[in-house]
Image (cartoon, rainbow, N blue to C red; front, side, top):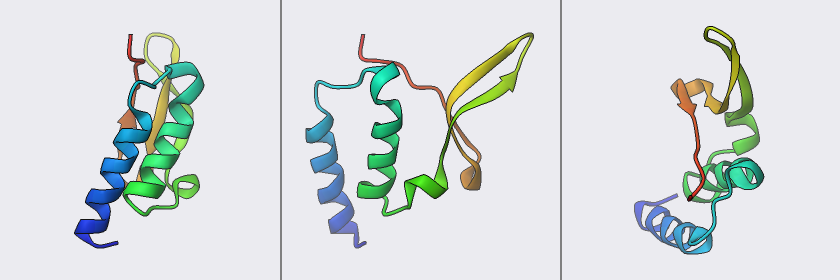
Length: 78
């Protein structure tokens, strides 16, 4: 994907998601679409959702991208 194609895809993605963003219902779809449509990455192979982490209790992060060691904790619009 060229730089221009990425910019156009990012603008379309942003427009498609404007006014949306329910954390519980749309987190996985948001990240799969972002990875696939904007970055050209196979989202299903790149990200794992609801990964347990051990703090003083067991909690869950919304997503984890192992290849880049990115932890995702997404919050809704409100």
